[in-house]
Image (cartoon, rainbow, N blue to C red; front, side):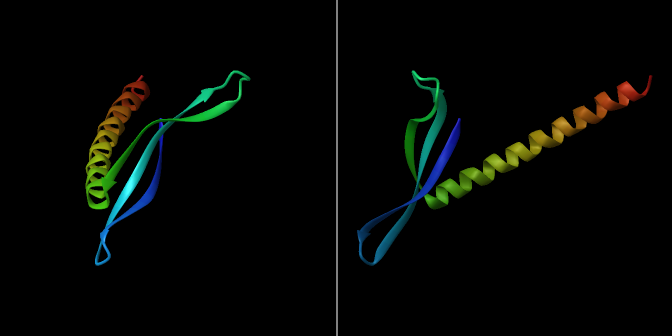
Length: 83
């Protein structure tokens, strides 16, 4: 599943502009002719600051997972090379 992210500006009044992002969650499927088509599963709209905060949390979580996998890989390689 991939995402298409675009800016969505909503003006509540001329003095205040609220920046938001529209996130389309998509996937690729085959149509009746066998061609790939992109289908939108769902769309969500978020405040830009909330979207940035969530992405930063996701990045930190993924970096921690990467560190764990890197350590596992080093252990496996050490075991393989010990023979």
